[in-house]
Length: 441
Ligand code: NAD
Ligand code: G6P
Ligand code: MN
Image (tube, rainbow, N blue to C red):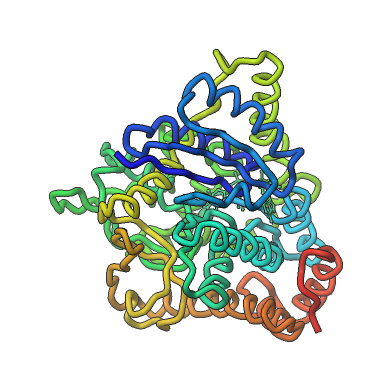
């Protein structure tokens, strides 16, 4: 079988060890010849890189392993780049979550003003790594996780239309795992229909391979419990704040019980609830820094100190196995069906062609082909049109350096109450994001 060279961009990410473990675990389906970590923060990446080098030597001695901050080394001779960068790191995630609170608006990593601010930072970092990949390995594909995926995907559509970049999200996969637990099935045995934008969508069908429809069983469960399951189905999305999110799906579901909602809709339907339940001194960024980040980096330091990974295992990212399915689909033309963020082009028939939507796709050697989801109801269409216009305005503001357009984006966001609040927020965000955003005029 062919062996692949993979570069992980954002090598210092809290998710890197989990992805590496998952790649090793899938070596029979997706063999590696080389694995490279790339980050622009060598110190941060070095802590994980040194530990993973020890682990790779013990568990996969035939795979060449490198961690580097040199783009030429990182992107030469690769087949895939798996990207999960966070421009501004946790320090800026904390700002995205806390700054809007001063204006009476909730703060969140990918939704509302926080997501818009993060989008303006991410575009530059993403374009940089896409350009490195195309310079040093023109045939490679980038499988991108970096958030905010909706804005990043729109920026790719506008600014790098011919680049081989696939933007993906693990939330639908994670929720499908919950659904499969609810009905006692394996996620791999289920096939879904879904329409929406990233972090903004609805399931319309959940069938097994024989065509039996389970959506009514899941609706019944969600109407009482949301997606809160009896048994934990994942190592991700388990902290108390996530449990609250799974539970809140019950209230999102009630608004349109025909479909099963993405949990992120809570930020658009219940912004007052989210705002009221936030602690301005301690947000999700703080929870992650004290939790996942600390755990992963402590483990890495321990491995390096002992000189062996024996007995100290990083957790395998079960959710990330779909990134391998995606790489395999392209590499081996498997035609697997998966949800991806792609240009609409008629997949949702009553929605603009040039909108980046999240829909099921068939993935093969040439990338994804979207499966037509047909016409969507007015309620969802209107919500999506508002949100996708926010995302488009952010990218236009970035490209044109336009203060006016970013003000419009914030004003249009369902999460911001008025143009006045939007303007005050914008002025504060510009100040807080100095050095990360293009200059706005
Ligand atoms: P993290 O801060 O731990 O890691 C991000 C790394 O990116 C850091 O080491 C940082 O130095 C590096 N980085 C920043 N800018 C860079 C640049 N221009 N070039 C190279 N490296 C750069 O963050 P994390 O919590 O592990 O998350 C990583 C990313 O994955 C985030 O964007 C997060 O939102 C995203 N994510 C997405 C999904 C999804 O569903 N799409 C799921 C999980 C995480
Ligand atoms: C889900 C979303 C990601 C998001 C992540 C945040 O997986 O799909 O897009 O980045 O949650 O999780 P965290 O644990 O960092 O709050
Ligand atoms: Mn996501």
